[in-house]
Length: 392
Length: 182
Image (cartoon, rainbow over all chains, first blue to last red):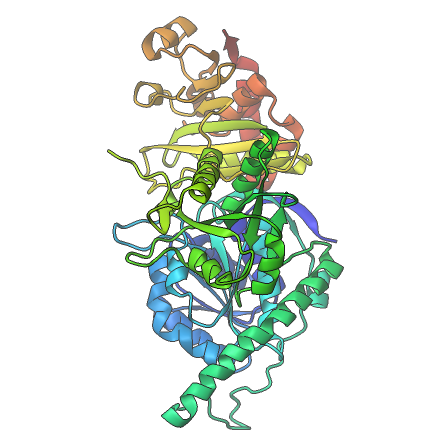
């Protein structure tokens, strides 16, 4: 039986990685991911997890080591944040097109400069197009559940893609909260041993990752893109299986009080909990407001998202990332693309909030909804608005 | 839902206090969050930690702006930090102090309800160290009843093992010696 405990989310994630029987964990510590890998190294040192913990010299080395261990057929996990994730950048594109199912938890943090250790989504948006499956967790329970789900999906032979679970740095990683930790038997039932179709084995030598001359490169990339799109079916299937065993249901897009809503807030990650409280307050005041939360970011669940929007007329999309010089934040751009020239499409307004640890409060969500309503009447001059910028 | 802000200095164990209360509340079947102020914390510098305890699921990731309860681990802090900032009108400040109520109100201008105990003295005598994070939980319990004492003792036993007994004694003594005023 699973047990409900008060536990720091980072420690719970490490426990989940242990329950998943990860075999190789190459990792380099960086705030705010540190507690995840510290706890994993303790678990390995204490013999609680039968894994190789590789204390590498950098994140570049961590991801390189991950590629080697997963290619050799070992269940592989790592974790990073921010500048560390960026240092992996050169390697991150490699396991995805090579179809190597590494699992990584990213404790999302801002990018320097100015130096910031605090939470937003800029680090992962830098890595938006690396071709890894990506989910976003709302709370500690989900962080644990999505970590287990990631191993199941990534290693499914129909998928064979690496996967990132995003958790908000500090606002999730450093919070102690109630979490149902599953037991080993349940996890073993959900997660069969890793059996790759191909692996590096001196007895049966094969080559992995050779050069892609112009005659094959496009085809390799198209195959990767197709694999990502096909993966959605198996992502959903794994969530169904998860529900059967653990009783918790996950969807690629979650709807909260969207029935008859005129305005829908759109969020990713842990601010969605505060957004639900804001929706409750606005509903109490007679406003027809709801919330859509994107859990599956890559592959983007376009069909599910369109269905979830229903008849809502206005979307207020919140990005936790400000790409300088772009037309709007990445989530806003994705949704504008999704609804382009679709008859009856909602008006989409893009907002940027919660950069570098700036709190996104209930009042901020109310302000965003008010602005979206005003923009629906009078088109704004800019394609996005940054919320809560101090004037002085 | 009750929200608590703990003021301490880096290294005094404010985060541990928050953790103990939250894990005890969760063990009782309640919902709780405990988290540090997410800053570049330094040993000796004024820092804060936060707790939320509720009978229903907690759906917020906001910082704590309007605490119901403020607990201060270090007697020197009220002179440096406005410890009552944002406190709810019916809130309470739980202080480690050797001062009287009049002196506190006069010196620090705190107008709210107060709970006072000389936790440094108790911790020094009971634990042999002037570390007040567990001692002050006795004052917090007396002033607010935010968790059940048995659940808190269990959390202490899990966290500190054989050192728990001394901490429990210090906590109990603080519980008995805490004076509530206003």
